[in-house]
Amino acid sequence: MALHLDLSGLFDSNPGKDGRLSRAQFTAAMPRASAARAALADDVPQWRTLFARTELQELCNARAREVKAAGDVDYFVVLGIGGSALGNTAMVAALAPIFQEWNPQPGQPRVFVFDNVDPDWLGEFLATVPLARTHINVISKSGGTIETSSQFLIAYAAMQQACGGDAAAARAHFTITTDPQNGYFRAFCDELGFFTLPVPDGVGGRFSVMSPVGMFTAAMAGFDCESIHAGAARVDKNLRECAPEEDPALLYALAHVLYMEAGKSVHVHFAYAHRLRYLADWYKQLWAESLGKRVNLQGQVVHVGPTPVKALGATDQHSQVQLYVEGPNDKVYTMLKLRKFEREVEIPEPFVESMAFEHLRGRKLSELLEQERRGTEVALLDAGRPVCVLEMCSMDAFHLGQYFQFMQIATAYAGGIMGIDPFNQPGVEKGKIAALALMGCQGYEQRAAEIAATFAARTNFRLSC
Image (cartoon, rainbow, N blue to C red):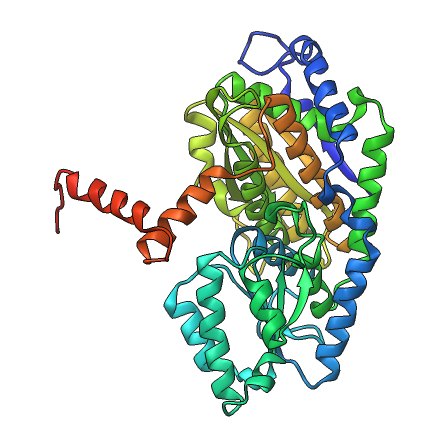
């Protein structure tokens, strides 16, 4: 049970032919990668050891048992955004029944993750679902995330109404995942008696999926939490113990950084399974928010970073691959594949003789999807486009944990190689501050005035059709 990474397609077998890396270029850059690996080993971030924090998982398990024991919970709702939601969505898509929103695993709730403030989406849900049979997990480390705060206020008001105005009964339907000591949510949760789970210190949102941010959802959905952590532990142990030149996460990171520096800054995560589609969304935030930076560690302005793109096979072979094969050669491709699917669907014998059907005789959908993937890989390689393949033996909790840990470590390595801080997000904070100012938040009056002046000074160029 392992992840398998094939980097062969990243290298040009005839150096200088198509712009792909040569093995000599890659080997020459290995000292940079080794230094980044050593730095991460010397200063181990808190997220890297979450798989060993059994006390955190027991808090999640105990709360899940308590919630379920209190009565039938048919619906479990996550309110959050960014790192507070994407990992949850990816886990549910990967491990729950595919149509779990209307046909969940027996004995488990339907899971919904709301990661936006679209009024139609949340409003219709709250008006449709029996809230008395719903438990809501609100996730915000600081409590200052305006989207999550608004979701919470709306959901709590709806829940209180569903409970006949009984505030204590309404609060029992909530679990708040937030900072254990500080932040806006901490104060009122302590004052009013909301049950809370901790976001551990030193764990940023996009690296938090194996903390209570993600693992309470896993416990509520009935996933094998122990195996998720075991998969992460396996990857972490193997990466720590191997030599730098045999570290797959390090080699993955180095290749992508070198290609970015050579002008291939668009990094496509091509998921070849329906269950993998939201792993690509989780990866996009991890890669973009960690590696897109204005300044490096020396404070120099560099405006550096790759642009991650999601693609789904075979769907996007019919929407994006024309660009990928014949458009600008500015991309690197990771094909994410499953070796074994949970089900096998055989293609029936043709009911008429036709050239459209003959080559499908006796085949399976899993075989067709893999040959679709291989065909796209061949087309990309023939066009001189760099491609690597990350294979998961199957889509289960153990392999999901492996994938999460692998990509988190690869991202940290990439930041080290680039010489930037992969764990901050000042650009995101600027957007948050602007939104708070525009909403009239106290303390942001000066910023609101600056924004108003900027918009007033803009040349009017508005059209209608």
